[in-house]
Amino acid sequence: MTTGTSSLGLPMTVPAEGLPGRVRIYEVGARDGLQNEKAVVPVEVKAEFIRRLAATGLGTIEATSFVHPKWVPQLADAEQLYPEVADLPVELPVLVPNERGLDRALALGARRVAVFASATESFAKANLNRTVDEALAMFEPVVARAKAQQVGVRGYLSMCFGDPWEGPVPVPQVVKVCRALLDMGCDELSLGDTIGVATPGHVQALLTALREAGVPVSVIGVHFHDTYGQALSNTLTALQQGVTTVDSSAGGLGGCPYAKSATGNLATEDLVWMLQGLGIDTGVDLGRLVATSVWMAAHLGRPSPSRTVRALSHQEQ
Ligand code: HMG
Ligand code: MG
Image (cartoon, rainbow, N blue to C red; front, side, top):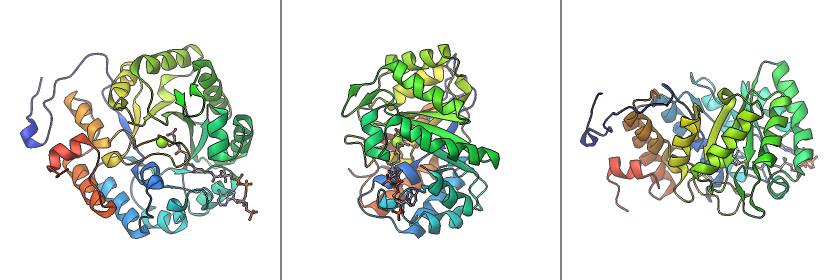
């Protein structure tokens, strides 16, 4: 057992059994975080944010979305932003809802894209102006064309646990859409708790059902919003079930403009603190990450909601 102290800005390290040796953090702050800001963050600030995130050791940083600019005006500068960061030595996935979005992303040399489905009809309509099946049909040529060019494809699935219009979402309904995304060729899945209502037993139930449906845990990522403070417990549960990809956002930025009651994602700093305490390798420099979120909070004009950022930066609340 190795130990450190929190006064040095690091947790004591005490490993626990039954957890992976390494976790891939899939950073979504620049996309999921900034898409939900009332004010549009200037493109130079976004580019600097992504550069700073890359310098912390994060290997996967979702950069932006090639969606309709009227639907998400905060990310309407995707064409200006992407070339500013394209040379960074990290994975820079981008969201694409349809072939128009894919064309825009490919024109800039994107090598990783993500489509984003919904487990519920209400959110499919609100977010994509489609039924669940129509949205899947919209993604099919996107995935096929991306794969034909060896571009990696992630399939997000929103509302995997609860939906603000429909309430609890039945597990088999979620498994069905996960299967459809994998069958169309997605390389990985991200299970979205869009409004943060999941609790650990529910996470375990969904992961068990996916395993029973033949979905390998190696393709599953988890994406927890932290509305009810459950994101970290849910993440630990997922790690205990063999998941090794975790989505989070620096400083806990985030939400979804088309889902009322969606708040920020699990904060990357809170995740790194826990993983480091468990002795799980992430490759991330926590001090630099906190400094990045403090810098971003100053641009946004309010402190980060992350407990770890607050503790390590001694921000006045
Ligand atoms: P629509 O209005 O049905 O679009 O929106 P359409 O297909 O009827 O096309 C209408 C016009 O939009 C056409 O132009 C298209 O060319 C244009 P016109 O011919 O009329 O001049 N258009 C586009 N322009 C630029 N880029 C495009 C594009 N597509 C069409 N990609 C659409 C359908 C999918 C476009 C729209 O609903 C949309 O953009 N939705 C995106 C919503 C979004 O980004 N939500 C947030 C991300 S999801 C999320 O946050 C959840 C997640 O974090 C996981 C979780 O937490 O659960 C991932
Ligand atoms: Mg999200």
